[in-house]
Length: 145
Image (cartoon, rainbow, N blue to C red; front, side):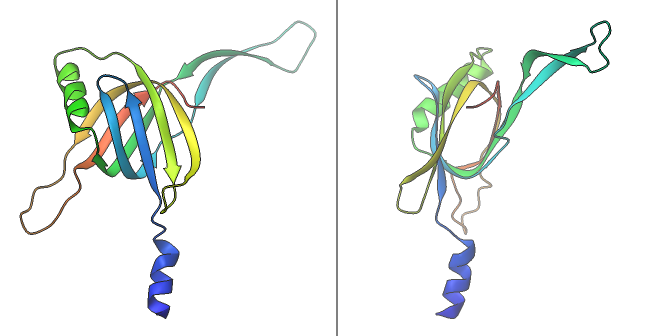
C-alpha cells in the first residue's frame, strides 16, 4: 500500500487535451506539452538628453510547441492535415490546449495562435509492446494566451 502511494505521488493521471485546426487539424490527448510561451522582438532607442533606453515592441517571435506521447482522437482530420502539408499547403490555424486532471476536469487552458505543422513522429512498431498512436508532434506557432 505504501509503495502504491509513493507511485501515485509521481503519476497524477493528468493529461493535455489538444484541439488545433478546424476541418483539418489535430485533436488528441497528450502526456507532455513543451514550449508553451511567447517571445517578442524589441527595438531599443535613446532620446536626446535621456540616458535610459526606451523600447518599442516589435513582432512576435515564432515558438516551437512539442506534443509527446499521445493519441489522436480524430485520425482522419490529422491525416488530412499531414497530406495538405506534404502537398505544400500549410495555412496557419489556431486552437486550444487544456490541462485536465485524472477525472477529466479542466485545470487550465491555453489558446494557440497561428500554428503550422513542422513534424510528426509515429510510434515505433513492435508486436510485443503496446504503443501510443503518436510519439511526437512539433508545431511552429505565433504565441499563446
